[in-house]
Length: 253
Ligand code: PEP
Image 1 (cartoon, rainbow, N blue to C red):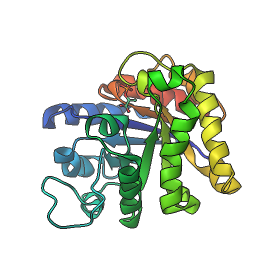
Image 2: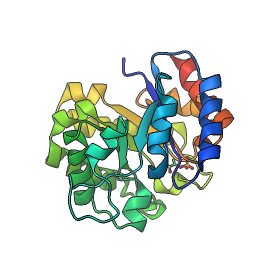
Image 3: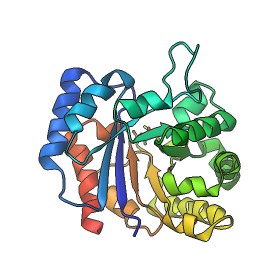
């Protein structure tokens, strides 16, 4: 059983006070379930404080980005080992905002994925198509390119310690959500691409859906056979909203 993962990507939001209130709310209301893992990904300056706050709660900590380099003259960058050092278990790589705004190529994302794993972190690899790519029937080709860059670089076995998030770009922060069937179709496709290399890895890797997940659409999405939870942006910034999504996963266990 793969179990569910419900992950909050706080993006560039928060403050010491707001983060404490948010996490206190999640801890106070979190469902008592071993098979739903909760994860929060705050901005870099708050990681250490959040690690202390989350200690012993069962809520995992992740970062939103990482350097592909281990150390050295990379001003402003953060090494994978540093993330482990401050208590991160996960790190998001290849988020569409980084691909689009910061110009990260699939090769760069693949290097970050490998560097994260080398440091003992679990990479949460984001893939997804734009609206224009979906409308011109390129969804699977785009996903294949983003996914295969990593599989070719790190090998299929690397996905035994990784999570994938399918995040259609047109659904991120727009209020538009893929229908459960649209999402399921892409999740199934991702599993088939991986299964062509290794059946067992494909069957066991968690694939999250991200893109305007809310309390009222989470159950429909998480109820699909190849959807193992969500990567949540906007709705991860209020404890009640995040918990409503986690509750959907909990109820489906
Ligand atoms: C995201 O940025 O990963 C995301 C899914 O955002 P939102 O939930 O706000 O669409």
